[in-house]
Image (tube, rainbow, N blue to C red; front, side):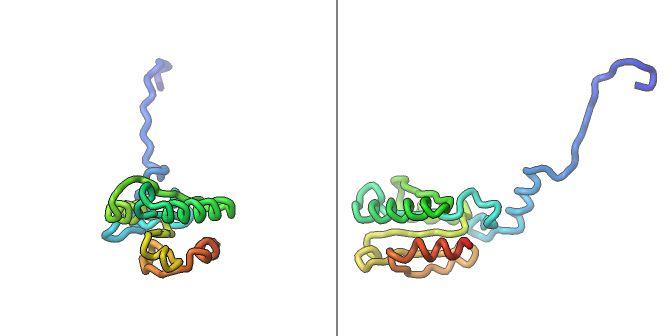
Length: 141
């Protein structure tokens, strides 16, 4: 100090740290369902939500195939393979705010389709199973 004596330093920081940046981003990018992450801040780019993953061989095979295709192409993908009800899986995917969502269910698969939605507009589209990886990869660019 001014008198040459050792003192314990006290410090305060009121800068913009990572927690404030994240909080500001969430405040600006959300809706009644939860967070809507920007592409740069999203923990994953795509979430795959398979209905009855543990019970349906068709759903599991389609989910695993799409997951592998997207990973091989360099996408950052979350496969939600929890054994939960459809409503829980869908609500959690919206709450997490991952920008792109693929929903795979037995009914749509029988017709060769999956459901795709972007979190920001949340408009679900029916897409052919064989075309979903290309569609998502194009949206990621």
